[in-house]
Amino acid sequence: MEKYINLIRNVPYFKNLRTTDLLRIINSGQLKRYQQNKFIYYKGDDAAGMYVLLAGKVHLCNYSCEGQSQIFSTVEPVTMFNEVTVIDGGPNPATAIAVRNCLTWNIGHQAFEVLVKEYPDPVLGLAMMRVLAGRTRELITLCGDLSFSPVLARCAKLILELSDHGKKRIDRQDFPLSDLSALIATAPESVSRSLSWLDKQGLIKTDRQHISVENPAGLLDLADQDSI
Picture 1 (cartoon, one colour):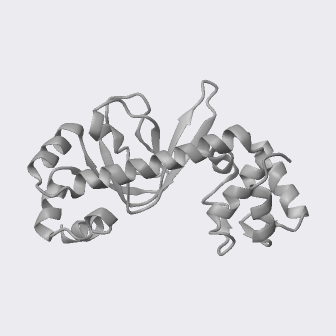
Picture 2 (picture 1 turned 45 degrees about the vertical axis):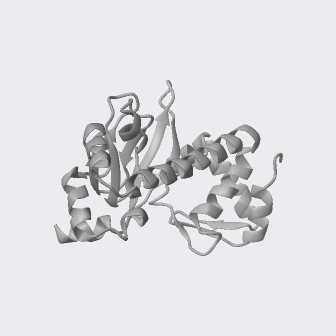
């Protein structure tokens, strides 16, 4: 249990809590494991509750009627997700998929209400507000990108984000073409053409294993353009 307490403590909003408080929080929920490529929950199903990803990687996504996916958030440890369902008890707003083998902590709507009412410190409520505010900002930015930015600009912006503005190479095994296209809501063929164009312009280097940023400033200029 000490290992899980230390993991939960890595959540920024819980880091200053006492060990007894963290133990109480953990015991109010459940530890769950998911194998790679398994669905954690589905959009529209009854509230699955809030999760904290302790290890692994999760994609939050939606699917069109044709089966095309749009990834609107990638969750890395140690981060909350699906937090809205513990607040309103409503259906899951998205589908969650374990991209890698995952260890999560999960708490349902009713158990969370009991915990908040009994817990005297406002840390849990404040944590929810901050996480929801951050998620809202992400969605507003995503909507703006999809509405006004062409595919090439969105692709340039995504590469900058995934590479930490050129500081690291993007592993194509972690981010295959299907995931890159889902992250910017377009077809894989469009991303492939964009990557090829960026490579020819000397902005990036691509091979079967990696994508490397060669000109971060040039890529940033391209990402900021509204029309190309």
